[in-house]
Amino acid sequence: MVDRPGTRVRAAVIGTGLIGGSVLLRLADAGLDVAGWDPDPATRDRAQGRGVVAPATIEQTVADRDVVFLCGPLPTLPGTLARVAELTAPGCVLTDVGSTKVEVAEAADRLGLIDRFVPGHPMAGAESAGLTAASPTLLAGAAWVLCPAPRAATDAFRWLAGLLVELFGARVVPMSASAHDSAAALASHVPHLLAGALAGATQRAPLRDAVLALAAGSFSDGTRVAGTPAERTANMLLGNRDRVLHELDEVRAFLDGLAAELRADDAPALIARYAEARTARLALLDRRFAGQDREFPAGGDHDAEVAWLRGLGAAGGHLTGCRIGPDAVSYSARIPVAD
Image 1: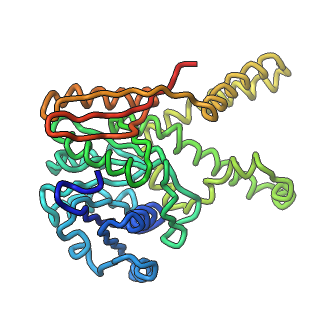
Image 2: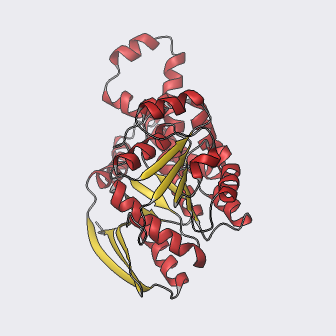
């Protein structure tokens, strides 16, 4: 899947911070012809210092590329998508790594780019930032959401899914953009709010230094993402505001229940509520999957193919392979086994 027929894949990465830099370094390690661009000249110099081609302009970076990864700050993605689309050939596949998907997917639709733009989001990261924190292994084995649009986008989705599985060992999770944003609100965005609240309350506490002296795994794990650069976190939360607020209400309701049972000295109710929470935690740590294979005509009913793909992701499944033949496309997938 790395090579298109008779060619060597040429890739570009626009924005070489933590995620973009990690994509860039992995593609370079895999032997692809890859170039990276960042608006910061010092970052481009650091990329060149790590042996990666880093031209001075976007135009030079994306020229004659087969795939371009858009990895800049979330609010810039629609504008960058429009610019890169103008600079690349119609056959160049475009994708992004932003933590919300609806806004950029809608921008692609307005721009008439759904035939070659596949919204994406690798579910990995760190509280550190920048190319200096990037690693070619950061995204290895990550769940990587791709959002197939109906009909025309399927060819680009198929090719990109195979590329990510092969180069990153990605668990490609196909979802609609709206389903991604709803799921990511609870899986990723609300945890940033909770981490910020705990760390912020600690910063204001009279015994701040004593708290930090006693802090162990529960505090460290619970506040880890509070170390993320504040602007990046704010962009993520604002970009998915309505869904984040909805899920925060659900979390608040559960927390209020815990507080009410604590005030009432109701040990059985408190135990029952924590047992419910523990079920989700244990399921995260010990998920069991079954294999599933599906085949679709290469030029057949794309709506049926996209419906199956989106259903797979919504059910918690992921792709482990995509093989494109002259007459058919074959997917290998894994889907959770019911408890």
